[in-house]
Length: 148
Image 1 (tube, rainbow, N blue to C red):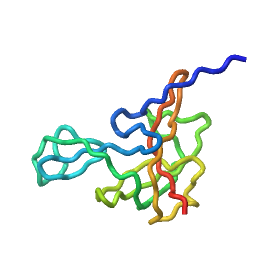
Image 2 (image 1 turned 60 degrees about the vertical axis):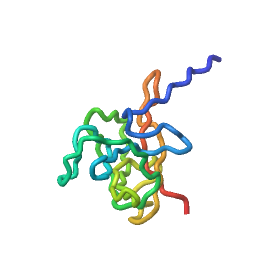
Image 3 (image 1 turned 45 degrees about the horizontal axis):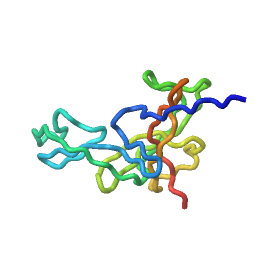
Image 4 (image 1 turned 30 degrees about the vertical axis):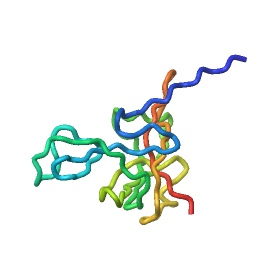
């Protein structure tokens, strides 16, 4: 019996996160003028209204944070999102990265619904497949509760 060819894992959004299964992280940017941090990365102008900076350096963001807020998504998002068929509802988490003083949205891993989430619980960033085609697995970051 022939074995199926293994699919190549690629980021669903290039440059937004490090493709390291053991230690993934989001990639943000820091304004060299004022030190403000941004995610997604900024390359054109500083989003801080008190700064006119236009030079940035990449920065790896924290992999863990506290669950700030959450909800469930019961409808498929518009394109370019590729919804599985049939669509399955999933939880969305807003996680506060304390060191960076920012909140980052993302899907919660499959199997963890809103009934298992509590504001203030610790979450960690993981990589998971968003969708796949014949040749590729398109990978995205997701949030996962840290085991107690």
